[in-house]
Image 1 (cartoon, rainbow, N blue to C red):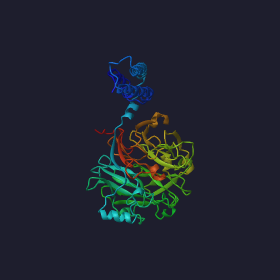
Image 2: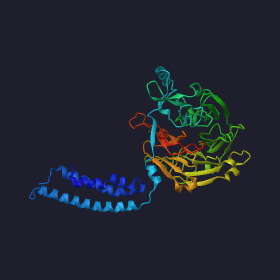
Image 3: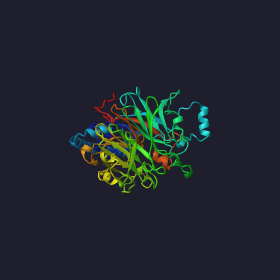
Image 4: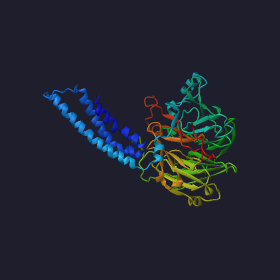
Length: 505
């Protein structure tokens, strides 16, 4: 308890009060930090004074009363100084330009669609799960959710109701299904149901899905599924690595679950012992898929791969921009330095709405590049000719995993070192114009893959992949969920969509 004047002064000078007056802008938030610390000190002192039992009738002759009276006088003097500083700060805030972008970022709408401590599947019975665990066909701690896509009527007419698809990479053994649909089981829990079926996810049959990292759904309701082919190359036991199956593109009709067509990449495009086909974007007009290959050995140091559906062909492009480069960026995630651990090359990619330019970046640093797709998809062009169109855009605020582009031409990407979602409009100039859409240390810990619902929201998966790969992921639940699907209001639609975004009510 405080006396009424001290309580009123505390409320008037509190950081919350000042932030309310400032409109929540980041500049104002930084400005109140210093004053807030003084307020806290004064508040603590006031509580000590009030809880000592002193009241309005103090006996001057008492040494204890005299000491408390002196402390009260000191606190009042300090509050007087705080009022003066508060007044000066209010004047500074009033002079600040109104920054609607920062205010929008501070209050962006974010909804958690689903969250899991461990990945769980839709089992036919308890006995089926028990057998899978006993046979090591399902090893709980080896399952991590990464890829994500949403399909509803606004994405493709064939999707008569909204459906959510997710992937679990076969980085390690014991992954029951690598491509699944998120459903609610008979107990009401969100689980992964193997899709199109458990049989189509058979890791022992190279004609089936071996390891799906990512996928994309076009406006015709066809899912372009990237099958890495290689499996278990992140296992602690080198003997687990399985390069038996080649990488392929599998096109599946979302409405029926039937495979429309399949294309096997040749070894010279996606090396069977080193490629890691990661992310994909689609140029629907030309029926071309652009993929990043986050290669992880000497046969593939990182590249961009092009799949031409109409001509049933593919090509590979590699240069310094697609490979690992140490440019001095320090990568610290939740207090731990991963600079010498995250050595991965090209990862996230984004395609402009007109399909003319492909943006891409490595996982190992903050660099962002672009390449002209007219040259990239022209298989008669040499790597040297393609490289002539590559541009180094600059450095993002952080390294990132996935990225995507909206129909408004804005590039969205995660910040692994800041637990943030960023946006950058190429029309606004260089990367210094990057804006923070939203930041959350826990729910946005490692933004991975993006998806569009074409209702003004972008969806993301978040996971703790730094902990998954380098140790420390908590599967007990004590640290909260490890995997999340989150929907964020951004006011635009997919790079493949046309027309203005419909806002979510």
